Amino acid sequence: MTRWFEAIKQHDGAWFEGVMADSWHYVMIDGSIKDKRWYIEAMQQPFDSEPSTELHHLTAKVYGNLAIAVGDYTIKATSQGKDLSSHTRFTAVWKKQRDKWQALAHHATRIAG
Image (cartoon, rainbow, N blue to C red; front, top):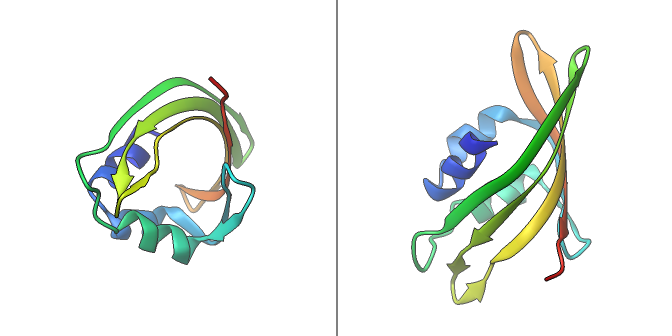
């Protein structure tokens, strides 16, 4: 997950393209569902200032060729005048194919407070 945050800061669409399954989807903190194309385009938008991210907790369990990661992070960022900051709990699902881990899905929930 730390590489994920680095790719966000670097607007590294190529990295996301390589690690996300074509069918990847994201259930966002507002309940909307976005796809891979949307996420990559969104991550390539410029930030108003350098975002700060902190991964507070991460637990991952592997079940054969599937892995489920659960954790929480804080992000502080604005893009095009919109505040993207949140403290978020997430669940991410990954699948190992041909010796490479690929992201399948991500679900995020804002932590109150």
